[in-house]
Structures are given as structure tokens and as C-alpha cells.
Amino acid sequence: MSLEEERIHAWFSLARTILSETGWEAAAASEGMQGTLGTLSHRPRPLGGHLIKFDFPSILIEGAATLPPENLLVRPEVRGLLEPEWPQLTSVGDFKFRTLKVFSPGDAMVHQEVRLPILRTCELLFGDSTPARLMSNFFYNPNQVLARQQLRRDFPEPGQCCMGWFQELGTWQEYMTIARRSGTQGEDAIYRMVVCFSAPKDLPRA
Image 1 (cartoon, rainbow, N blue to C red):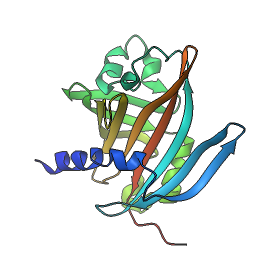
Image 2 (image 1 turned 90 degrees about the vertical axis):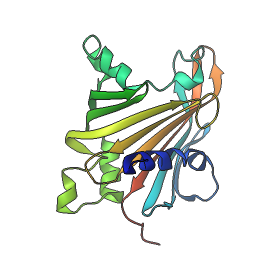
Image 3 (image 1 turned 60 degrees about the vertical axis):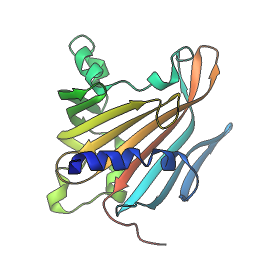
Image 4 (image 1 turned 180 degrees about the vertical axis):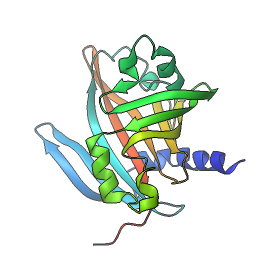
């Protein structure tokens, strides 16, 4: 197994840990009238550095009640194929990407450009700000970044889906998105969405 494949396998092996509440240290939570809107927590990473987790327990997806829950996240190469006719699928606000190579269904190499304000905040708080890394930071980059995206359906459990994003410029930064349906409201579906990413260094203790 190549170093890259070992790295990808190690991340997907963390999927159940990411969904679990055990072993995570809560850092912040946002509360609404219907309960918790989202939480921020962290824990040491087994391979070094730190894991940062955003957990959103009740995301409403309109018109998704009849969609098989494991199909919520779209394969990267499918978005690439639709780009000529529906560019909005690959250029959503401050997030753009272009498919370069498909290894297998749900596994592709892409160029992506990320300008999401929340990821800019994450980069400033948790990223590596040394000069050599500033132009290749995965979380917020105004230029195209080479990355590998891999989607797994019915993973880590049946009815769930999981997408891994892996930086290819040597910064060893990556993140994972996991979607699990928790209910429906008429034609809409409610999902728990969890986003977990790696920080290159251990976080200082308070």
C-alpha cells in the first residue's frame, strides 16, 4: 500500500470515531430555540497533530425525503461531468473545483479553489501560517489547489455517506464530511452533518 493510500485508509478508519462523542473535548456550542445548532470540539490525532470537529445535528435538506440517505453527497466526478451544462454545481459561491482524473467511481483528483469565510477563520485559528505554507493551505486558498476527493456510500454505517478531501501539495492537511439522516419533515429531510479536519500542530492547552 502506497503512503497516499495508507493516509486515505487511516482517515476513513476514523469515521466512527468522528461520529462518536467519546474522547472529544468540547470548545464551543451554538444554541437555538429548537436546541443545539452546532458544536466545535477537538482531540489529539493518532498520527500527530489535532482533529477539529464541527457537528451540526439538524440540517434541513429541502426535497430530500425520498432520496436514499446514502446518496446525499454527490460523487466528485459526477459534478465534473455536469459542469458544462450546470456550472453552478461546481462553482458555488466561494467554492469552485474542476475534475482532473477519475480513479474509480467516487474517487477523483481535482483542482479546487476555496474562499469560504468560515474556512478562512479555521486557517487563522488552526492552520500553519509559516511562509512556505501560506500559498498551499487547504482550508482557505484563493488559488487552485490540487486535492483528491473520495466518496464512500453506506459508510461508516448503512444509510450514511462519507467524503474525504486530501491535500496533494505536501501540507498533509485533509478533512472529512459525514452525513447521516435523522428524520424527515414532509418532503424535506433532516441530516446530521459532521465536518472534521486536521490541524498540523497540537493545540496549546488552556
